[in-house]
Image (cartoon, rainbow, N blue to C red; front, side, top):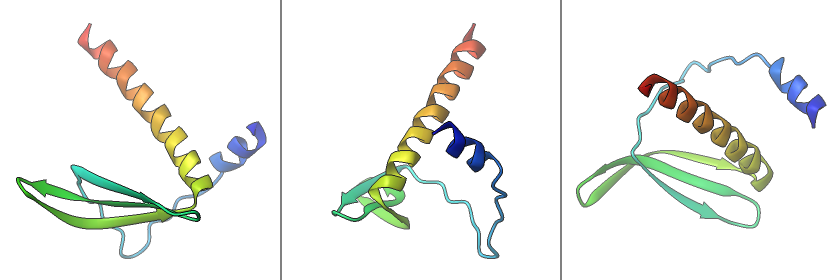
Length: 84
């Protein structure tokens, strides 16, 4: 596993020509045997406007979840330190 993490660090991220950032405050998760589907968008009172969909394999979802957990822990630590 350590070898895989080392390899991931050497990847070069290149943005596609149609790359865009989207703010979301709502996400809905669906799961099949082969895919995790995350629909996200903006919730306004009784309506949600879905603007993005991410589809990934359960294995990629596990990696995504672990990385998200790491980033949240860093945020918690930084926020806690900033409050002192």
